[in-house]
Amino acid sequence: MWDIIKEGHAHNFLKRSDKYSKAYYNKDKEPTIVTKIPEFMDVIGQRMELVKLNRMDLLKLNRLYNCSAGLTFLDSCQFEQPNICGWIQGEGGNAKWTRVQTAEGGPKTDFTVLGQCQGFGYFMHFSTLTGHHGDKAYLESRLFYPTRGFKCLQFYHYSGGDDDELNIWVRVYADEESKGDLKFVILYILLGGPQNSWVLYHVNLQVSQIFRVVFEGVKGHNASKGGLSLDDINLSETQCPQHSCRIHDFSILLATTKIGSKIFSPPFVSREGYSFQVSLYINNMAASPDKMAIYFHLTSGPNDEHLKWPCPWRQASMEMMDQTPDIQKRMNNLRMVTTDPTKTSTDCKIKTMELKSN
Image (cartoon, rainbow, N blue to C red):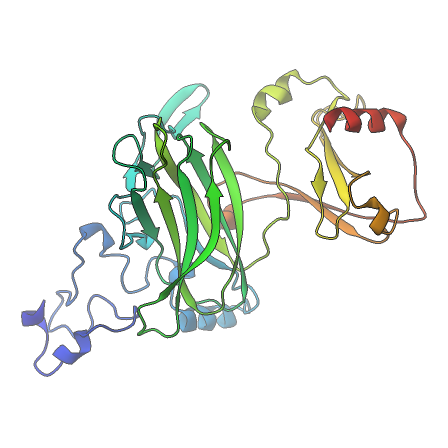
């Protein structure tokens, strides 16, 4: 709003970094910067919440409260507000991501309490019901100012198409004045992958410069039943879990599983090549029917001839994840075990079940 700016200060409104607030250099109480989308007025100026302050303000506050080592959370968004946490439609696409509560051929995010629907949440959706093969839509985050080289991007994804693609990029900035270079991170080709269900993904990002996260949706060749959906995006400066396993219909299993029965995860392979599985007693043993128990099992695998056995002095961390959308508010349950090569045992029954699982 050039007519509101004090004389001689117009140069301050040339393209700059994102640190300027909406009321910089104003004559009175009216803002000097007005967003084209009204819902974004409270996003500019880095005043949304603590984790979205600029890097120096965040550092000062953490030092003031003696929390200088806790700068790990960069962003958390559930898309419940119209400003969608500052995410924007990226350039270069001929389609768009839209904020919706339901989508044809897509998910429904209804809140149910005691069997009664209490309303619907929001998510971002790229519809591929219409259009042409190769149509693209980009969803870009706000700018992030990292303090560590490693990051974990966590999000829920729902696929309603047979061969639609979801590509993940980062746009890296050499400095605050550059236009940013788009760098490819990972490609999820969803052909034959999980469909018609929300799936949790973890993606490791190796970036130490100012950056944005970019989701690219691409319409596949086959006829689509819906499209791509994103929700509950969390970004933290931590290492991603190495493996994850989802138990479907857990509330039903909790009510119907016999005491002492257990279920097994799929077989996994660690970074060093050790094969393992995790088992879960949903209703534990007769002595403790109101508790759960989790066990870590080393199993035979393709790399046995090249590894030390029985896997001496390795630590395994098993974590049950609370599904609260904001990662900072989750109350996860973590258990750790350390392998001791002097303590071994053989359980034929467990071995048989593991073979059946394979």
